[in-house]
Amino acid sequence: MDGDSSRPSRREVLRGALAAGASLTAAAALSACGAQGDVRRARSGDPWRQFAGATLNFISENTAPTAAIAANVRPFTDLTGINIKIVTLELNAVAQRVALDLASGGAEYQVIYADPYQILAPYRKGLVDLRTMQADPNLPKVPGGVGDFIPTQLDAAGRFVDPHAIYTLPYDAPTMIWQYRRDLFAKYHGRMAHDLGFDPTPGGDRTWEEYFKIAEWFNKNARSDVAYGTGHQARQHDSLMNDFSNVLWSYGGDYFDNGKKVGRLGAQDPGPCRLDSPAAIAAARFYDRLLGIADPASRTWDWDGLGAAMRAGRLAMCPNWHEYAATNEQVIPGKVDYAPLPKGPAGTANMYGGTGVAINANTRPHERGAAWLFIVWATAPATQLADLKSKAGGGTPTRTSVYRLPEVRAAEKRPSSMPNMLTASAVTQAWLPDRIGLRPKIPMWNECDTAIFTQLSRMLTGEASPEEAMRSTKKRIDRIVARGWVA
Image (tube, rainbow, N blue to C red; front, side):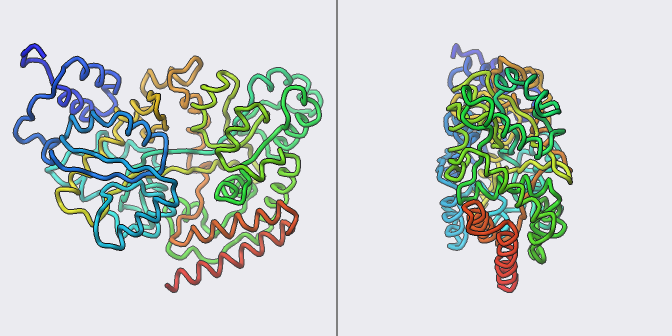
């Protein structure tokens, strides 16, 4: 620094970016900060400095936005004087540690990556209703207001039963979409269209039956370029439930009555399971048939295995989480494109897997305030833009305003400096209320999930018919829900 007190400090620039929402990009903020040198002492009464010296522990699944923030957390510390320690684990381990922490009455982790199903639904009483923080006149507000979050995500990731209480701010938004080898579809488009009798271009207007025919065509006609037409995350694992659910919903089946409401806002008692419905059984029959022509290794893959197979050139297409776009572009640049998943007799559905960040209700007052500053900063438009550009992480914005930024809109086309934005057209359609796929948000979902993928796995190995698998799962889920509700 040259001693010119007229220049803003790093902290002042960052504070301005937060206050302006997305009107000042993170790139501009960080660039300006880098030229200013040391941070000046905060002026008296700065709401962003009131908890300076505090230390926070943030526990998170090892996700793209957390990787990006962990690699560049200095702007937050410069802005607030708060130290943040980030612990990243596999999701089940996060849920176990959070459960123990909340049960202890303490707050080893003040900031929590609160998965809607494993943490929010069963433990929302241990989380702060963030409306109290937003209403506190002594604390900074969410830039742009909570209305800037994508509405379906705010409900799915942030609320439980009560349509007004907000327990988390949406933080990430992985969503399942159709990923396909654009080079192979271009090469074989004419032949496929002639042989199949329809335009094979992927998109939400294609049906699952057409998806099946496209996959089968690649199996028979393009072995010199690709081993299999389709692959799936069909291991006996949570991934299998996700993969199947897209088909289930598109066929008009669901896990419970009022499935959209149970998925979006949640329920304590969702009522009887509906997997024995004709629509659910029809979906299971189709899914069993689809996996019959898919890469046989599909039954050993979760989402990571499927993503690796796609990048290795084994598959012409697959349904997978959209945030693999960044890795696709690193490994096989320009070869993968993205579309909404196919439709079934009842429409299209794209599984949403997003999560929000929450505050442990056991926190002491000054820690609670510090935690609020962190989650406001971590979900701010400027931070989300910086995450998008990060070489260490990525993630996808949960803010409507970020998608409107000119540089973000430009990144939706190749060459893209933010490769996850290549999926923007697909995911913004997938997040519409009538298209978003939301699994049941109920306190006992973990056990239900296990019942679902266990029986589906039996079906795929021939141990049970689709009818038997669906009816057995329905009986198991009804017992789980009844026991959970009585408890």
